[in-house]
Amino acid sequence: MDSIAVMPALPPLSYLVIDDDVALVNACAIWQQSAALALDTEFMRVSTFYPEVGLLQIADAAAITLIDPLGITDWSPFKALMLDARITKILHSCSEDMLVFLTFLQALPAPVFDTQIAAALLNEGNSLSYQNMVKHRYGVEVPKTETRSDWLQRPLTREQLDYAALDVAYLYQIWQSQLAALQHLGREGWMQEECERMLENYRTESSGDFSTYYLNFKSGWQLRPHSLLALQKLADWREQRARKRNKPRNWVLKDAALFTIANSMITSRAQLAAVEDVNDNFVRHEGDAVIALVQEAAAATEAECPPRQDPPLTNPQKQMLRRMQDLVESRAHELGIPPELLGRKRVLMPLLSGLLRLPVGATLAESDVPAELSGWRRQQILEPLLQLPRP
Image 1 (spheres, one colour):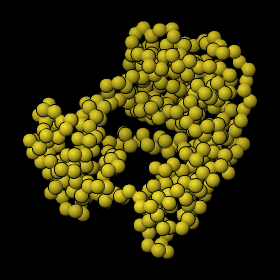
Image 2 (cartoon, helix red, strand yellow):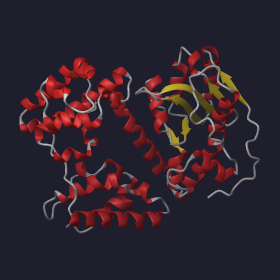
Image 3 (cartoon, rainbow, N blue to C red):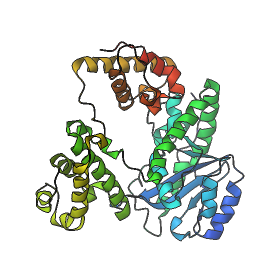
Image 4 (tube, rainbow, N blue to C red):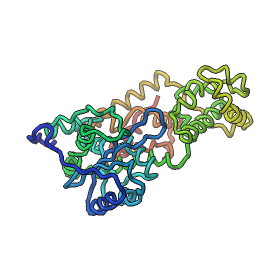
């Protein structure tokens, strides 16, 4: 791990603010010569489904630039830059930033290097914050004073701009240090896999296929086949409505109400109006669409219904899950990485389900192996997990 560099707290920052198309074209021409770019975004997402971008921060090896997006009309040169495979995009804990880019660029930056993921692979901490990373490495306290700032107001204050610039001020040099350390450990390939898998999660957003979102309802195992199909259809419908209206999911229909509609197989406006958290306005504007989906589910054959979800684990199954978690913890300790990175419970659960369905002596099909346990984890933890005795 790097030693702490001696630096004064909050050194004076120099940065450029650009807010028009010509300046953006000129900046992109310079950035195209870079091996990597540090990125961050400031956005608002209070009453909308999609984040509203308020500021973009870019740093190369020499300078920091802040882009005011409200004055930009042509993003094509910047989009080309973000898609340039020759340039690594450095971000920290970038999951929300990815949705920002997907929203206003209709594209995902690639390739990506997430310094939070790298910190975990280097055993610097799981879910390490940017502030703590900078403090540990450079002895600098990065303030959080503008975390809840209004990034859509204009003009932005000097305090807001300074805060935003600090969010990328150290990312480039952190990337250089982490990349060298990962290469020394032979884990650069692990890092590439992790970042690519993270991007894959966001490609679902652009595909428009939300047919698996019903699996987020953990009580789905309680439903009968046709109710489960109704849940699938309603969850898919809500995702599409939330995006079309640009409103949070629960503003369209709350989870509990959606589950009740599916469970009760509601097929009339009167029944729908009696559901808690369903108001007259929803019944008037969305009721027919919701009822039609339930009726479609009711008319389907059982073969057309999704597979039943697994019920809660029995005590012997819980004991097996505990053995799996113990193995993950032991192996993670040997590798010097957080157990959460090697095998979270949400990844172990589908693997356990696949193993429990296997006939005695059968081998787990590749399709039953969670994607998160492929790649570098296959050798490090999957094979040992498969050797554990089953209840």
